[in-house]
Image (cartoon, rainbow, N blue to C red):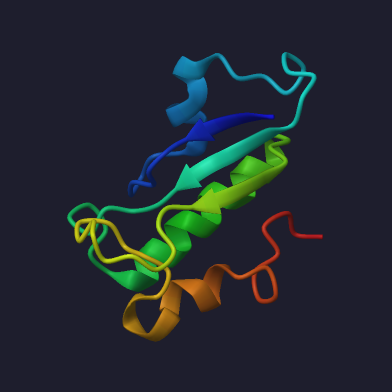
Length: 106
């Protein structure tokens, strides 16, 4: 498995972030995972905007034939500049959980 690592930013598409990686679904025979994604609080201070930006990135990852995704970071407070999924009583966790958000729209 190969992994791609990005940080979501307002107005930036996943396409624009991985162009420099020369990614193409036909190029890799192994599954390619969006190895970690996340959002900096300084770039996206509003949680609703974090949700919409991340959901758009994850839907785009599916359309690019990525096989899965992981979020950085789930529940640690060491990196205070990044949103984690447990902050604000699990707001991001609830909005990105596969039970509530189908990233491939199936």
